[in-house]
Length: 62
Image (cartoon, rainbow, N blue to C red):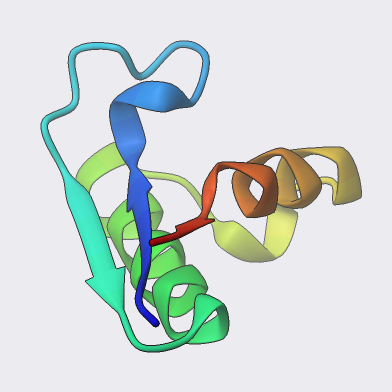
């Protein structure tokens, strides 16, 4: 089973074309954190627990 995340599904990021697919949800989360830092200028260490939970809800198995 693979997991995927589309950045445009996160509120406020509708114009971002990035998506990530990996074997595990935790691997996808690492890609999302790196993407947030590089592409959006965010510091993932500063993300609130609510932000992290919202991202995790958007990581879907297929």
